[in-house]
Amino acid sequence: MRPLQLACAGLVAGLLAAAPAAAQPSGTVNFYSSMVLDVVEPIIEEFHARHPHIRIDLLYSGSVELEQRIFAEIEAGNLRADVIWAANPALFLNLKEAGWLMPHESPHAGVIPEGLKDPDHMFYAGRVHHMGIGYNTRLVPEDRVPRTWAEFLEWGPQAAMASPLHSGTNFNMLGAFVLSDNIGWEWFEAAKAKNVQVVRGTGDVTRGLTSGEFAVIKGIDYIMAAEAAKGAPVAFAFPEDGVLALPSPIAIGKNAPNAEAAKVFVDFILSREGQQILVDRHFMPVRTDIDPPAGVAVPEAITILSTDNEWLAEHGSELRERFANFY
Image 1: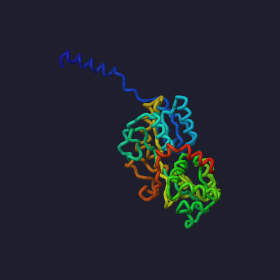
Image 2: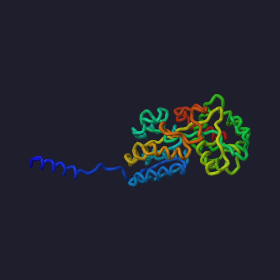
Image 3: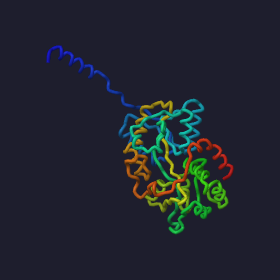
Image 4: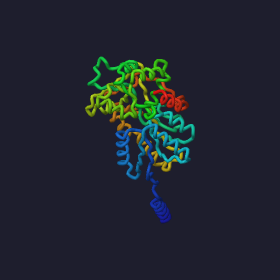
């Protein structure tokens, strides 16, 4: 190599060596979630093992309280959340319409079905779960397991549900029942007449079932599977007239203080590794390239109640008010 070539090569090498490496996302991600701690904590732990320079600051609350917190921050002009993961799709439609979400084209979008992601990349389903009938196997013989929502009511005060004023899943179930030609508000009138119990949240109704206080509940598939795996005398039934299939969206706030780290965290939850953590906890995956949990019915084998998230987003306040005045 000639002297001039050597000099130029040395100059280029020196410039490359001096150029700083692309900065990796770091710092704190403000993570607002209504997902139960048994779900989010293992995800956070695994994420931190892979990304030790990013700290996840979790704000955990029930769905309704979390929504109240979010809208209070919006009213004050300062939504602090980097990432929001909650059980109510209508919340994300409202946030999108109001301009409070940041678009993110995740590299995992291609293996997520169209119905589980926003067409404008504003949010993705982070998990899918079903609400049907949970029952105590010590109190409910196999031939008396409710096969319809009408049969659920036959258990009267031994039946229970979490309040849709607190639980996001039960709020969506309220909307699905109201929109159903076969169920409707009349179901709640019958439930009140038969003294079906209403308790605060999903954890409360689940504890009542495992303890034997209740024989049947409006239950969630992954929670019943997790309790059964721990030895609790519970099981889950898919009513013939329909279950609620609920995607739980995850999104990045419009003014996310740490947007780049937020994207890394969202992408991990949507990744094969993140979704496998959820499958190990009995959730249906949102990816098409991961098998569902062993022993959990696949969507093709069950009847799904029709839902309308846009209608629910528009009429949510009046639904809650009517339920509060009624029950």
